[in-house]
Image (cartoon, rainbow, N blue to C red; front, side, top):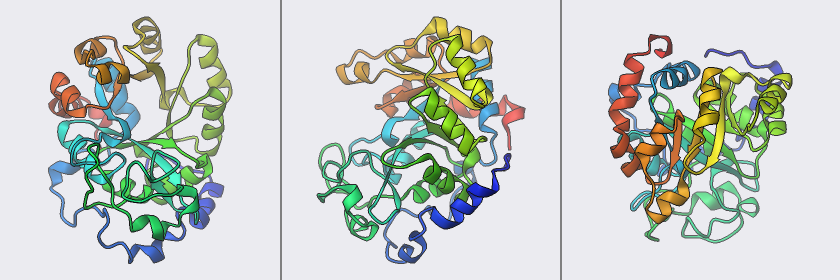
Length: 316
């Protein structure tokens, strides 16, 4: 670990981070535990310094991929271990995941308020226990039921250890809960937490000052507010919004040593996306729905590995 986190957060982790999960783990032997044996090549990101790696991406004009909702596709549901594995195999490094909470306080991956769209069940997430949700099976984009259940947040963090980075989007959870779970999983230095306002970025930084975060900033005044609020801009990626990027603002941020990200989800949906153009528009991370197409266009698998080889400061 690169960072030292406050005593209060460690206490919170001990008390609240998916506290019921240990007793229930025995009930879910068919769920998504990482493979017992993993090829060393699959764990190529073990010990990598995430901020330094992103700095290298900016300095060498390499664009990395974030799999939106873990990169669902036929045969792999959104917010699933299966989709993560497929996206990692394609060359995405950041797994954007939505973290919700069951009625008994277990953090799981789920985008919607209900389980209806992405599982074979029905019901509100916050009205269902973890035991109830663990009985459900995920469904893919074509509505096919899969032999895979809903992963917990700790499942996802354990699976990604050495393989990729978690991009955490909160759904009916709190920064305290997310922070406690990251500390419990020893994952503070391999995650990016999404915030949707400068105020939220400042709150998160106060709770977990050493975690990387993503937030929006449209001006030098916004950057000043972040700094004055105690946010470490060296751990901050600026979200440029949905579209084809903001090259001029990206260039300003690059000169300040700050990384950026964006996504062209509309272009992907209507078939007009140009991944090469997105790459030229400067962001270090592009969030994509169609991971295979983006990875092929940008040679993401090989480019991300070559970047690490060329970046001694980031190597673990």
